[in-house]
Image (tube, rainbow, N blue to C red; front, side, top):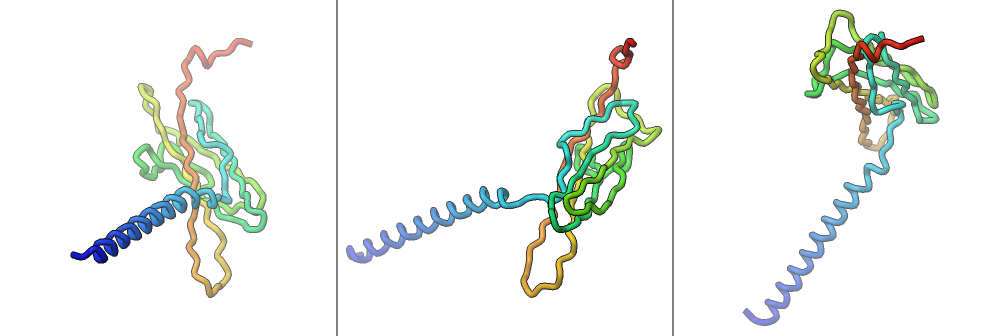
Length: 167
């Protein structure tokens, strides 16, 4: 092998390494920067919902932060294994339209007859998915993502001594 070939190979390897580093840096910048550009239109007023035993329901306010478009909010509850459940809690209404710059209320209701374990804390998750209005016909291709929010629901068992209050 002559020195010109070695020099040429070394230059090619350096160029490949520079391209790899550039590609890795670009990927890192996109991965870190793109979530900053995303935003949800439907936003809940809290990230945790505390349900105290004995209360009929707990309210969660959702707001449409979009000033121009109405959105549909679809809500459901999952257990700690991310499995959609129908008992012991239910969210009402499960689907609703939220007008631009407006708020609506979701109610997390405990169903009668269903008991929660008293020896440990249970955790459930309230999921809220926003569904945007259908776009007008367009010749452009678009990627549509439907953001969803996930709030934890923590049922609390009231101790008898704490439930009594003196007047």
